[in-house]
Length: 156
Image (cartoon, rainbow, N blue to C red; front, side, top):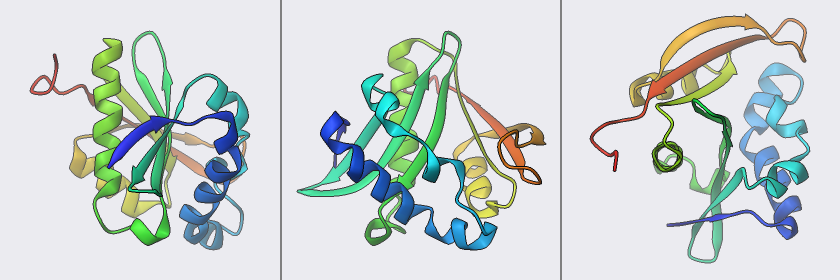
């Protein structure tokens, strides 16, 4: 497995992978989650989108924003053919490594309260819930904010 930053030419691939990875939630919610409708061109330009490859195949991606006091994960997406192979954990590990490189003490993320499987995964990985709030872009949806201190055992 290898990581690389997405390039402008990867835009359609990023959008397609995200749509496929979030398809079960689109069906559950009756509308696409925010990562599905995101315009990834500015994120790619800012260097926030990282692709995870397995040989010549794209296995997943992670979108990480750099902030002065934390790294913010906007999206974790695994290609359906690669789901169930612990690649979500590999992507979270990568985000933590980036946070260490950036010298920030915490990784944050937010997710939909109905994404219970994801919340359980994030909790098992060491994230803790920091609050819940209405989603400002999707009336009736609730956002769960989560945070995890950057692990000292892997800090440089």
